Amino acid sequence: LATFGLGRRKLFTAAIALTLLAAGLVERLVASATPGQLTRSYFGVYRVMEEPGARALVHGTTTHGMQLTGSAERQRTATSYYWTGSGVGRVMSALPALTGPSSRVGVVGVGLGTLGCYARPEQRWTLYEIDPAVIDIARSSDFHFLRDCLPDAPVVIGDARLRLAEAAPGSFDLLVIDAFSSDAIPVHLLTKEAFAVYRRALRPGGLLMVHISNRHLELRPVIRTGGESVGMSGLLAAAAGDNDVRGFPSSWTALSSDKALLERVRATEPSLWVGLPLGRRVHWSDDHASILPVLKGP
Image (tube, rainbow, N blue to C red; front, side, top):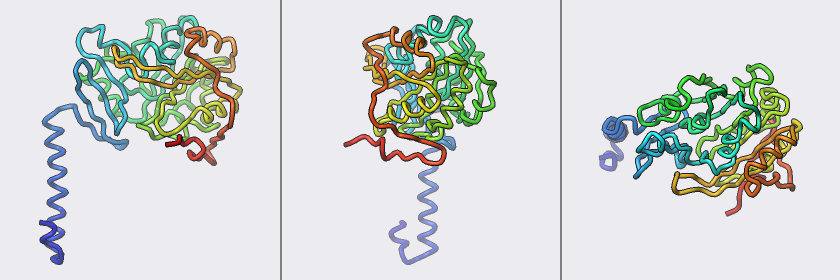
C-alpha cells in the first residue's frame, strides 16, 4: 500500500500511519495475550521468558536474572551471575565471618532480587533501583526472590549515585554495584567521583563489590584505578558457570582499604580469587571517560 502511494502524498502518509498503527497493535496484542511477559519502560523493554525448569528476565540481549521453577527450595536457589560459585556468591555465603553477623548490605541494581536469598534475619539490606518497572517485575507473581527472601527490605528508587550521596557516612558494611543495563555501561557509576561516594557510604574498611561481566568492555583497569583513587585495593573472581543451577560465567571484583578483609575474601575460595591485574590504568572521571581504551578485541 505504501509503495502504491508513492507520489500520492496523502495516500502515502495514510499508508505509513496504518503500518505504524498495525505494528503497535500487534505488539499490544502479543503483550495482552501473554500477561506479564512484556514490560516497556523509559529504560527499555523487559521480557519474561520461559524455558524448561526456569523463568528469566531479559532486557535487550542480556539475561538479567533467572529463577528455577518447581519446589520452594529451587525457587530460592541463587542462579545466573549470583550462584554460589560466583565471586559475589562466595562473599554472600561467608558474609557473617567477613563483616560481622549483623552486616548492613546495600545493593545497587535489583534485577530479580536474586542476591536477597543470601540474606540472614540479623542483617539489614537496602536496595537501590533506578527503574520502578524492575521492582514491579521482581515483585510480580512470576518471580519469588524478593517476596520469599527480602519482603521487607527498603527499596530506594532513583539514580543510586545520587541516593547514596544522601546516605549517612558509613551506612554499609558491604556495597554491591550491579547496575549495568545489557552491555551498556552507566559510566557515571565507575568514575573516581563515584568511587568517592561508595567509599563514603561504606564504613571504614568496608567491602565494595562491582560486577564487571561484559562481552565488549574490559573493565578491570577502570575498577583498579577507581579503587586506588580512594585508597582501595582489590581482588578479581572470574568464575565458570554451573548448568545445574543455571549459573552463568561471571566476573566480580572485591575492593577494600582493609587488606586483612581482602585476605578473608580470598580465603573463601583461594583458587578463584586473584589480585586485580597490574598493567595500564584507565582513569574515568566525571569530566572525561572514554570506552575506547577498554574495548575488547574481535
